Amino acid sequence: MSSSHTLEVLRSDITQTRVVEDTLPDSLAENQVLLAVDRFAVTANNITYCQVGDSLGYWRFFPTDDPAWGRVPAMGYATVAASAHPEIDVGERVWGFFPMGTHLVINAGKVHRFGFSDLSAHREGLAPVYAQFQRAAANPLYEAEREEQDSLLRGLFLTSWLCEDALYEQDFYSVGDCLITSASSKTSIALAFVVRERGSLRSLALTSARNRDFCAGLGCYDEVICYDDIASLPRDRKALLVDMAGDAQVNRAIHEHYGDRLRYDCRIGVTHREALPDTDENLPGPTPEWFFAPHQAGKRSAEWGAEVLEQRIGSAFARFRQFADSWLTVRRFNGPAAAQAAFRAVLDGEALPSEGYSVSLTES
Image (tube, rainbow, N blue to C red; front, side):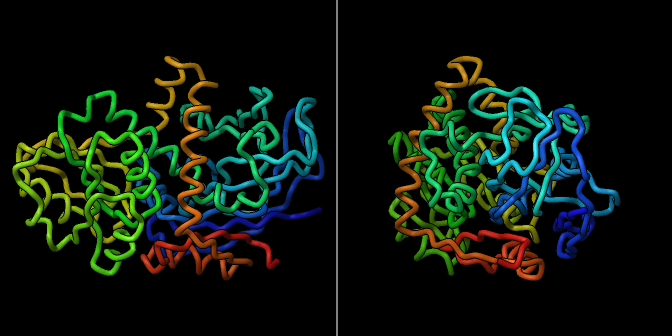
């Protein structure tokens, strides 16, 4: 019998991690598929999944035997290692959400030329987009040498593209400035890139002093402001906020500075895990609202058709990949100990914004 290895985190204290071993089945049931995960990306997004895992269902993606521990979803590529589904072939390459591990067994269904889904019972009630696996051979943008970059950027770019699209639908709340916290995070950079491409808003980066020069050097932000300098922002301009940091102190400082001139507060991430949002009581201006990307994706898919939506996002992502070539360096981590160290470095904010962590639980 062969086995799989998976990184788990203690749900009550995500600084605590372990790698567990599971026995893989000798044979697969009808329509089951065994996916062998080569590498997966670890970014600030994974930390957000942990922070909101209970409220948004992320802990339910990959159940554990011990509910005190959770398996963090991560973007990556895998190969079909075994298949009991007549329309899915061994050797196929797929992209999607996986646990931080070496293998995943799914109950495959909804098969089409672009991909298939996991129809396991525990997926019921969860956003279908997270259960989809896309066939690399059917993706015109697929390049084998860009797999690690895709794993790092593709999912977060999708979130940022859909966020900007949702803002566009609201005519950007009739403002001229878009404030983006945690501006050095890759999701924030993707949002600034999309905002710049449309050209309707000024993007203002809010970041720490240590990441100021990095953000300024990217070229996608119109202005870069340190958190300590929020009071220097122009009060006479109306603004909206896309909050990737989830820092209560920063969020309150922005609301108090702008008051009613802050027209919308869109909350996406929780990159500042030590300073979670407060209850939002008595905040001047708008009440923060969580953005849920699958909702916007479903809306646009119904309006435009899934293929048109994929084409629009795909062409924009291709341009973002080229932009990322100028600043992103992939750093590889191999083996259980290295995988846990990579997760902890991202969790503690030690990862350089110019680096992307590509992780494998195997030693080579």
